[in-house]
Length: 310
Image 1 (cartoon, helix red, strand yellow):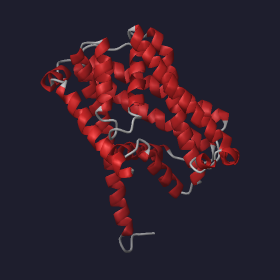
Image 2: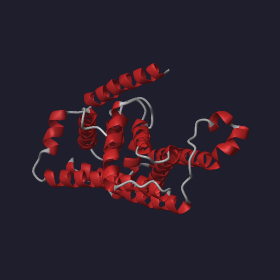
Image 3: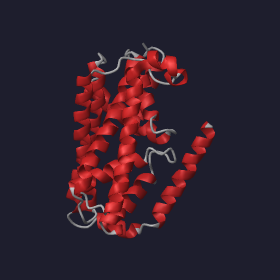
Image 4: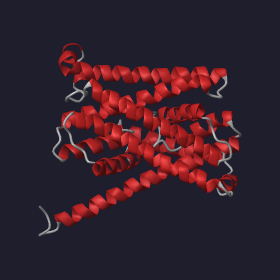
């Protein structure tokens, strides 16, 4: 089954990227993104993109700190970069979260509490993103049919996130009685307090607000900036689309979502250029995560040398 999942992702990766590439005039995209005055748009988008990742990290950090797991800002930033890297190169969109959790537990934190905190943080962050997009939908430029379809999809994901949160909150003790197989799958640890979840929700709102602006700026760099509501809806939609386990790191899926749905709002060439820019931003973060992992390997090798280990 695992091999089948990997095969599906490999095939999906090439199919989606191939289809996207067949729809794009890359020479025109390069000309669009290198015309005079675009550098300021790109610089602003890149800066805000990193700030968005920082806000997301502060969100899960606040959850863990409320449970007594102290994570420094440096650790948070490095763990997040590594998480993005491993979530891209390994099957499963949560591979990076697993690596992050294992490393935090290896640093002395309670494994169950870390697992619960990271899962809850991810669910709250995703739920807030859907709420923001749903709130913005009436103000978007989407045609009514597309708006209704998007609303249904986002509501479905939001309800799913709330249901999983409820299952984790009920705890294994209750589930053992009625759903023992499910109880064996959920992490056992301290569930975050409501105040901690509220703080995580606020960080999530800020984070996805920033990502909404990033999407708007990427379209601006391509020639036609989106409004904040359009950026919020498109940002969340691309994230939701990447939940499907049919690619690695969302490559191909993200670009097609942005170019196809964005192409309803602006000229298709503009949407394609924005999709390429967003892909470059994401790839840059993945490469930074790869550099962090290389650094970890080098440090680990030095510590393993005779006379230098602990």
